[in-house]
Amino acid sequence: MNWITQLFLTALILNLMIEVWLNIKNQFHIGLNRAKVPEEFSDVVTLEAHQKAADYSRAKLKLGRMSLFFDAAILGFMTVGGGFQEIYNFWLGMQLDALWRDIAFLLSTLWLLSLLHLPFSIISTFRIEEQFGFNKTTPMNFITDLLKQWALMIVLGLPLIWVVLSIMTAFIDDAWWLYTWVVWMGFQFLLLWAYPKWIAPIFNKFSPLEDGEMKQRIEALLERTGFESNGIFVMDGSSRSGHGNAYFTGMGKNKRIVFFDTLLEKLSPEEVEAVLAHELGHFKHGHIKKRLIESTVLTLAGLALLGWLVQLPEFYSGLGMTSQTPVAALLLFMTAVPTLFFFMGPLSALKSRKHEFEADAFAAQHVGSQHLVSALLKMYRDNASTLTPDPGYSAYHDSHPPAKIRIDHLNSLPPMAKDNSLEVKQP
Image (cartoon, rainbow, N blue to C red; front, side):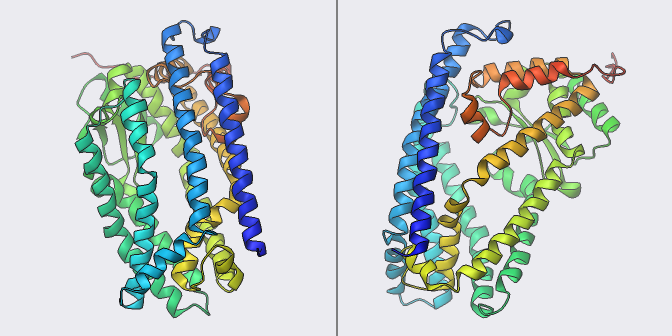
């Protein structure tokens, strides 16, 4: 067993042990607090809604725990167990051109991995989400979405893989990783730009927000915060789920503001304005830009690391590949190497929670904290989000602060210096 194998298996097992321990700890903590609604939420969340959220969270944790063991076993089998090499051997016998053989190997392997995980998606959608009243997806819609995802993987992935493998083959003894980084980041920015107009509508319907008090409030908020978008849209989220949400998408002049129809049905215009103000806070504090820069730097560092690893025979043999080819290196880098950096997850979550506090403060400054608090309370209740997560689990995983900490932070913020809310014009 070479040092790569030892390092990989140590990281794989350590990560699994931490994840399972935190999962069980969180499940126990939520169950322990199931019998009583936290006092600060009792005016909005009933005991029945609180217990539904607890049961929903625990059901997802149980499924997640099964997925943790399954994913670790599959990854171990595919790497040190030689599964990836067996798939590559199959394609070696197909008498294809070397480049197209490698493309077929990579795409088919990624497809197989997604197929192996499919039962968990089915259980999540048609058992857990169905049981708790959130699922609106029909089996036909589920299959159709799946086929669309696979088609996109081919349409978008095939030319990208072709370019990357061509670069790796032609410049394997040169700075191929730098050229690949340029291509990859160009592809990522193109996707960000194209997603709102060309990709998202493949899966959902988007319609402009209708005129009325809500639109007036949103437009006034955008004007006084200096945010420009390519439109305010409502997405038919109710066609697939009962959960509600809102988000920004796109980049440059192709930015869009999107609200789930389920969110608009449950929140007042003032609360929707507050939720949007929070999202604008991310933009105004440069969180999106910072994440893009961070992703760009980490991608460059990762590809530079791969540039070193491809020169090591033990990198391939240690992860179960006897074929020391660029496509083998690329696949191992995509599937096995991230396991070695599992410790970066909690750091990312910590930074994300800091950004959430900053965005909340921005919203409180421009629309006041009262409506954002009431909106969050409704969203916690309607989305069956647990109000009592285990602190350790939350600190390790959650991108958003726990409900109590977030609400306490909002309530501690100073009131607006003046009323920035919109005086809605009467007809």
